[in-house]
Image (cartoon, rainbow, N blue to C red):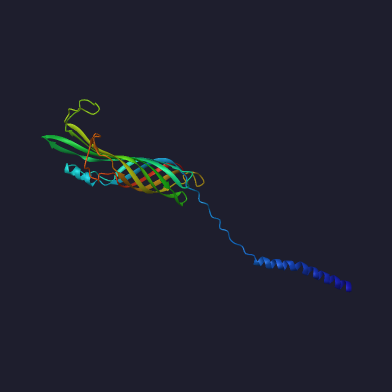
Length: 269
């Protein structure tokens, strides 16, 4: 009987010994706290290299040009001027989200042909307004969504603006096709005023690279929409590239708002 009591007492103490640490561990487990860790998705820096075709509508101030044309019986040069050309871009690896670009655009507008009577002879006259420029710039990309970026930037460069008037006598013919024409033929003439200028153009672009090859494949096409304002700093006006023109109005410039749209082919994220 005594042996059985001792055995029972020993078993009881052993069970208490095992349970005591378990209760202590349970108390410590209840005291533990767990913090949630938010894993942020790392944004990939902008990458783009490629080039493509651009079309632009440009709205220069030509009020004074039209005023002079009207005084000579001609119609207005119509605006905006449609310009076409190319754009190339390349990411600067050492500066994240930054790229350089080069753009070349040119376009013209033609004034309707008009007829005049000079010394009882009929003449036709046309006017051509032409504009072209080359610019180098730098852009910085802000990612709005997957493959959708907004890129403010600024560019600078140089361009040429010209207004040419051509006139010929109705029914007149040219006896030969020599360069420059005949110096003794009074029935045909052309007069051109032109200016080589430098420009500064701040602007902003919105570009989207659609997943044409699939979401897990590289983007090889980028669609572009750009708005910018050109500030032109005019040089010396010349007539036919020879005679210097003085007192030309300051409004004879290549400043104005331009809207571009285009498509580029290359590699873009």
